[in-house]
Figure: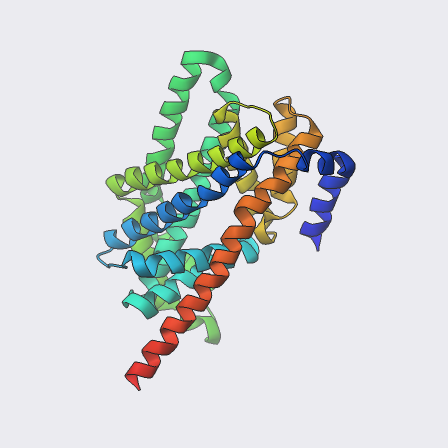
Length: 311
């Protein structure tokens, strides 16, 4: 309800009649291009998960990884702080016998590292490109430092980690998860201290951010307006951070408000920015959610058939 209220407020202050008029003048070809980019975005997310799982000596085929990735995206969008994404760990165990503690460590690593990179990209692209060559050099240095920053995690004493886990898992109900939680943290540490994995994961993640920025750029182009691609990528990263931290389903309202505010700061009219937010939901959120529901039906069907064969 809060997300819907925020989204309605964004549209209300942006003059709904003008938004409707803008929507009637949309060029279809750029929108189709933005819609088509959902495919490589999802494929790259699935490949990134495959790379991280493989680092812990387990394998998940792309045939299984793709539907699991779509289910994870949809469930994460529907739950506070994207916590529903942990369903992927359960599905990997069911499809490819990946231990639950390994899958949970992979999901936690992907979520936290991706969020960290989103924040870094957002801050760097908003503040530095205006300074010319020096600014772009600083962006490159900042991304390099952001890529290897998780290595500092090793500086935290394991005693603090064990103390925190003991606090979380105390009691009769949570106590039975203590060993699994510690095992998950051991795998998480192994991921955080692997520089080659960090570099490769960062490269894939930034490629995803750029493609998602291109989607925004195409949506704006469909409204006969142009912005630098750096502004589109910065808008994507910033709105995603706002949506995740707001804990609202699909980041509804919060991500849209930040997107409109950021583009307004770049000189785009509020009405045009709000129209972009509406169209972006139509070409990214809606089709990916529908694909996630279809993938869930596929996963459930595969599970039922496997159980029938066993019986």
